[in-house]
Structures are given as C-alpha cells and as structure tokens.
Amino acid sequence: MKNYTPESFVTILETKIWNTVNQEKEDVDVALEIFNTMFLHSINEICPEKEIKIKSRTEPWIDSEILETMRERDNALYNANRNKQDPELRKLFNKLRNKVVKLNRQKKSNHFCDKVEEHKNDPKQLWKQLKTLGYSNKCKEKPRIILEINNEKCFDPIKVVNEISKYFLTVAANLVNKIPKIAKRFDVNSTFFKDYYKDKGVIPNSFKVSKVSEEFVLKELLKLNPTKSTGIDGIKPRFLKDGARVIKSAITHIINLSIETQTVPDLLKQAIVKPLYKKNSKLDVGNYRPVSLLCIISKILEKAVYVQIEKHLTDNNLLYEYQSGFRKSYSTDTCLINLIDHIKLLKSRGLYAGMVLMDLQKAFDTVDHDILCKKLEIMGLNFTGWLKSYLKGRTQTVIANDTSSEPGIVTCGVPQGSILGPLLFLCYVNDMPISVKCKLLLYADDSALIISGTDPKQIAEELSKALEECRQWLMDNKLSLHLGKTEAMIFGSKRKLNKVESFKVRCGDVEINNVKKVKYLGLVIDDDLSGESAITNILKKANSRLKFLYRYREMLNFSTRKTLCSALIQCHFDYTCSSWYPGINKKLKSKLQVAQNKMIRFILNL
Image (cartoon, rainbow, N blue to C red; front, side, top):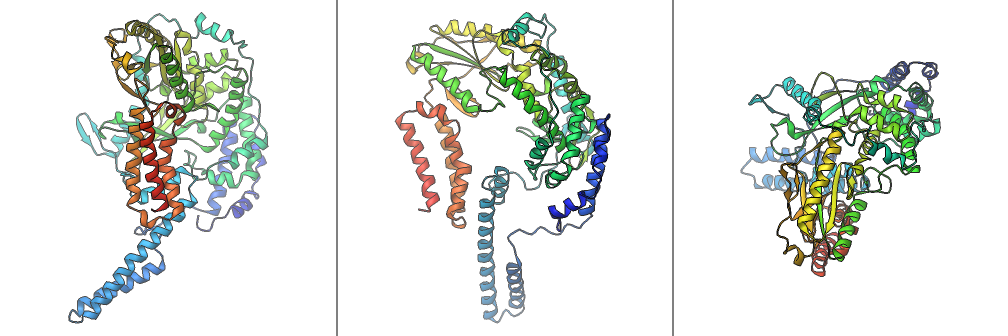
C-alpha cells in the first residue's frame, strides 16, 4: 500500500470490462463471482501481496533526529566506559542521555496531540490513541485464548477454536430446545396477533421491495468507512470506496438481480466470527461473545432492502410506540425519559410504581426464522422469499489464535453485525404488547413492565401475572427469559417506601430478585428517583479519568486536553442527562459542578 493512490487504482479498474457482470441475468452467485474475480485481480495488480520480514517495533514519533541522538548517546556511553578516568566523557554521555529523554518526550507529545486533533471526531481512532498513553489495561497484542475443556486447560489452538465454534453454534439452539412445549396463546396464528395488526389497517403481502438506482449505490459506496474490517471475500472497503464510480453499475446489477430473483448470494451469507472476552473466567467459553465480520458488499445489499422496509414500517406506523431501540429519532434518552417521567407522574399522584426489568437470554440469536417470516408477511411484506434466502443457509467460521474452525451452519437468529438484523429483531418482538395490559417499555430486547397502585402487595401480584403472561409470549415465540437476572423494584417517596412491608414478584415458582437500585440502559436508577446512585456512578468515572489525564498534563496542549475531556469525561455528564438532571437536588447538582470545575481547570491548565 506504500505507493497506492486512488487515481492509479481507478485507472486499472477502467481497463476492465465490467459489463460482463451485467450480462449475467439469471444467477446472482455467478454475477458476484465474476465481479469479485475482476475486482480482486485489480487490487492485486496495484498492491500485490508480499511476504515481508517484520522488523522490531519502532514508536511512530521516533524520527531520524532522535535516532541520530541515540547513536551519539550510545557512542558516548561506550567511550565513557572504556575511559573511566576521563570525567568529561561521562558528562557528555549524561548530557546526550538527557537530550534523548527530552526529545523523546517532546516528539511523543507532538505526535499524540496531532493524532488526537486528527481523530477527534472518530471515537474508534481516538480510543486507539488513548491506548498509546496506557489508558486501557488491555494488552497491545491480543493474548492467546486458553480454555478449560473436560476439566483440563487446553492450549491446542485447533481444539480451542473448534470448542468456541461449537459453543457459538449450539448455545442458541440449546436454549430453544429447553423451552417447555405448552399450549400456545400468543403465536403468529393466534387471534391476539392477527387482531393487533388488523387494528393497524395492515394488508398482508401488500408491500414489495423495489430495485435500486446507481445513484443510491454510489452514495452508499462513498459513505463506506475505509478502516472497517473485511469479510470472507477479502475486499477492503477502501478499494470499494475509491473505485465507486467505476464499479457502481456492476454492484447495482448484483443488488437488483438479488432482489429480482429473491436470492442472496451464498458468499454474502458467510461470516468470519472473532470471539471477544466479556468478563469473569477467561477459561470458560461461555464468557466470550461473537463478533461477526461480513462482506462489505452484503452491507450495501442489506441497506438497499433496509431503507425500503424501514420506510414501510414508519409510514404505516407499525412499530410499537414505546420501542426505542435501533430507530431514527429514538435512543436510550427517549426510553429513559419515558420511564422516569411516567414514574414521576405516578408518584405525584401519591401512587406506588412497581417495575420488572426482564432479562432475555441470547434474544437476537434465538429468533426463529419461520416465525419471523410469517410475522413480516402479516406486517405487509411481500418479500419473504428474499428474506428466507437471507436468513437460511448462513455459515460462520471462527478465527482465534491465528487458527480457523470449520464452517458451521447457523440455524436460528438474526445475523450479528448486519444492517438488517436489528430491524428484523424489532419486527420479531413488535407484538409483545399483546401479552400484557400494563405499561411496557422496550429498548430492543431490554424490557420493562410498569404497574401502579396504592397497595404494594397488590402491585406485586399484578406484576407477577403480567410477567407470567409475558413469559408465555416469549415461549410462544421461542425466546427465553432469564429469571435469575430479572429484577423487580418498587418506586415511591422515601416516606412511602418505609411503609412497604411486602413486595414479592413471582414468576411461577421463582421469586424475582427485589432491588433498591437498578442499572438500566447504563443509568443507575434509585427506588426514590433521587438520582444519588447515578451521580455517585458518574462522579466515580469522571474523577478516575481526570486523575489519569493529570498524569500527562504537561505533554498535552489546550486543544488536546479539551478533546480528551470531552471524549472521556463530559460524555458521562451528558449521557441521558435530560432524564435524570431535572430530578436531582441542589446538593447533587453542586457535586456535579465541582467535578466539572475540576475538569475545566485541567483544560485551562490552572
């Protein structure tokens, strides 16, 4: 990539006959194969793969000036050690040593400040720069994964990667198989479900996805992030973006052929999966989650379908009004404002508010493809042939410890890391409200049931009934409720809460964990809505991060200090502040102001 330029790459692309892709009118797999062959050949012409010897790592700020001074320092040390009777040689070495330290510190500071300024609007790249300061405690090099298999530590990379692959492929199916086989009440064939969409005026199979224009494809190609990882086809987004104007016609043809034949190319259904450690023991395969890498072209195809389905759902007001996940003009803010304002209203009326936060197990991974397609048909989509092709026959290959597993077939779930996956999940859980008569707030799979009243015991009984009904809906739709992580909470003034003698929510024979505070969508909520726990959590993060930045104050200029404080500290003050700030007292506001004043003094270097 050393001598690569977009202009030279475009020149090579223009020598290819891209019309051969458009001449394939029947088989989208063949059309994609022709395109990939020509495109990869063009990439190889301008930057062929070569084996190189990796030299010892050099910090990016170390330039010829530092290297030359280092050589002078080393020579001075050599001479000083050989002529110990001459003190002037030792003084010269000390002088050069100090010069190297000063130069290194100065160059590192300039390099870091320049990089922060360059990437201040790119969180991912900014985070990389913070790691160079030692902000993250993660290793610069990814450690090898070691698992405990059959009660023994396994170091064999092949066994480890196959164990991870096996777990990722079977964990969702195992959850589905554990769901009790009981009479269905809220499935897609129930009157509850059909009436829910009938009342919205939806005509089944009334909407069909249309073909897209070259202008749409060109726009999406030019929006690609060149730093994103590649999929199994090995095509980097940088090349697609640079060659967009030359290849737009060929890619448009592939997308439209896919829509016309209602077939998704097999290559675009293959994912590379990398395991990402979450928490607890690193020896337990269950403590890793999959990160999927898909082909970039598949994301453009998905976007072409996504924008049309999303418009149909929005124009017909089909999505549940209190679903705040993965929607335009919705966020965690809207969900938390709805939640807190509703509870405040109930408190102002002298009522208690009982809440249950449901924890769904592997919700995205356990979506049943047949149920999803039936739901989409009822929601008006006459496009389930393409969607079935998109969902079924997907495979994934796990890569860990520089080793690949055998490809495995994914039998359920919406594709992780995809454009369409989140929207399809919203459609899947969209009818959950048919199971309950109380307030239900959703953020994707994060669900909250709220019931009010004057008697905490009665509220608990009604919540128990609502939770059981919701659990029935989940089982009918092959989703699993994790009762061990589901939490119950009762809200009220401190005076009223002191009067509560019993508040026990149950689901079947299981008593739900009753808590005084809960973390929901990243915000810690107290049972009296005082905001005290939220402020304590915010101040803890803000003070620890400011303490870290103070260690490097001398090497940071004003602009860099301001950028880092905005990225690391101010973001915590701002997060969902419209939901919690109006309700906190003067004492808590004063604590926040003190913390912000500390941050401002750091920025101004006072």
